[in-house]
Image 1 (cartoon, helix red, strand yellow):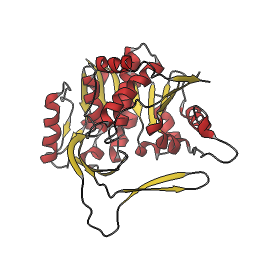
Image 2 (spheres, helix red, strand yellow):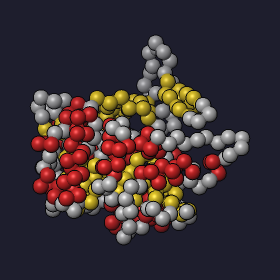
Image 3 (cartoon, helix red, strand yellow):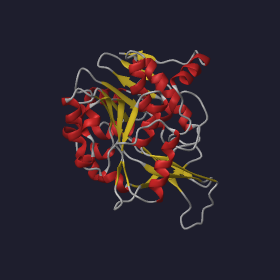
Image 4 (tube, helix red, strand yellow):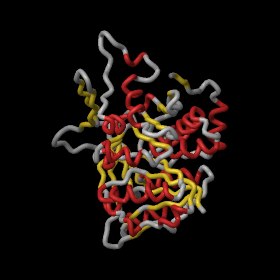
Length: 348
């Protein structure tokens, strides 16, 4: 029996950092958008370069195992040089690979990550085999014999198996942590609601939550300073729409502003844990999977779990590589003890 099984993507990630990258902000009355730009038609020099294995299914499996949970991963790869790299990366982990899916006629997922001087990134992704997981590929018996099913974003045709796996988990009393991706969200809220109803823990970033609920976060105006409130009222409205069952905890991450949670009774806010930012890729995976594991460790202490997730996420963003910088629970506890003034807040 496994403590947790993850299902999601596996990719070879190539990180590219360039000092000539610009961040362009575009404002309207009700929306702010940011874009990364490069000089058009120019040959742009790279200032830093690295390659690592990533993907939501891989990143979270490695983190769960590093936190001491008996972990297996369901992901699909091809049979090429990139799949060799993916499998090689697991040799230093305790992740069980008996449930991996390998198709010699498909290509392994590949991503180019453009990193800004602020540490944020734009990802150019080739989904490859990640988009082709079929129901017949999945070992449902392994899911049945696990305590938690962690569902990372499933892309392309792989999203078609989402109904089957969440219904199976529900019917077999397997807890579900659902990290919604854009493919699921784009299918509409009525579809998403059926998935949400099966999940005990739901994690989205603010942009995904906005897309799912069709609620925009309004910027400050001369008359109203939303930013002075602990949690933006529009984010509270997102929570109310996303929480479709009493037994759920909903989490919305907000990049450098921290993260929020809602249990149906009160709202929680946790700021980011201070540290250097090299690349934000993998921060969301580390945060979501640590939060899930911490809930069990802390007897469902939501605030403490948010803090633990933030500490581990800070370790990831301090290095290139979506699964680099991960901490054990003992290391997380040590960092929290060192920074005793770091805490969360609760509001109604």
